[in-house]
Structure formats: structure tokens, C-alpha cells
Image (tube, one colour):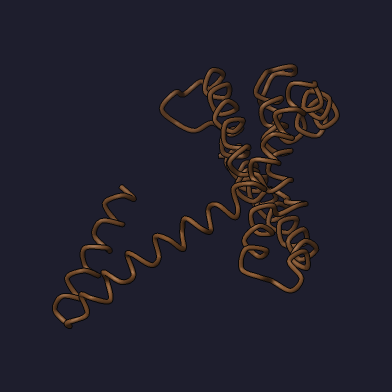
Length: 194
């Protein structure tokens, strides 16, 4: 669906530039911005590779399992419908750890595995379960301690102080997580009364 929207927007832009006589601007933009995009990707890539490697080492060394065991009591309260010791809790904890480091690309596989495990215990296979919804809220609004990608972008664009975003980012993501989880809790309680 999103690809159709992008195709539509790009098509409208090209048609508009043709009608207004700015077709050369589109050609110039395609050629110059492609190079800029590649330069941006190449400047961010080393940081993402480094942190993804660190996450892989943490996973294989058992550090993520230890983190999962530390946060499991909290996650059990947050996800009361998930049986204790279920693999989904470990994947959720790993996803949270990766997101805290600002590594959405490293968090995605853990999130997909968590959703797969949550689907196995879902009584209604065609409807998202409560734990799935809560995990989606937590994943979307999760606390980020080190916004790796944002830092990389700020460094790539020559920011004078790229790390000044860390504290406001922590505060903003903490508030969004708290607000999202509170709203999820309220909606879940209202739904259980119906």
C-alpha cells in the first residue's frame, strides 16, 4: 500500500514538473540527491554495524538472556497474559535492549520473533491479542538511551554538539512510553469491563 502512495506522489511530482517546465530540476535532483543519499548511508553504516555487532556479541554471550531475566518480573506485570518462561518475553526484552541503544534495525528481528511467539499463544489468530498490542505500543514508543541513528545523522551533517540530543531524547521517549503504556492499560481495563 505504501509503495502505491509513493508511486502516486512521485508521479504527480514528475507530471507537475513537466507541466511547469521544471523537468530539468527533477533530473538534476535525481542525479545529485542519489549521490547525497549514498554518502549519508555510508556515513551512518559504520555506527549501525558497530552497534549491531555489539548486540550480536551480547546475544551470543548470553548477556541479552541475563537482561531478559532481570526485566522479566517487570515484563510479567506488563504482559500478564503471557505464560511465565515463554520465549516471547526473552524476545521482547531483547527488542527493548536494542531499542534502548537506538538500533531499530537490530531490534526488528527480535520484534518479529516476539510477535511470532505471541501469535502462537493468541486464541484468536485473526485478531491482535492484548500482549501484541501492548508490545506494539512499547516497541513504537520505547525509551531510547542512546539514539544511535540520530547521533550518526547529526555527526554526518556536521553538528557542533551531536550528543546534546541524548537527554531530551531520553525524556521524550520516557514520556511517550509512559503515556502509551498508560493509555494501553486504561483501554485494556475498560475493555475487560465490557
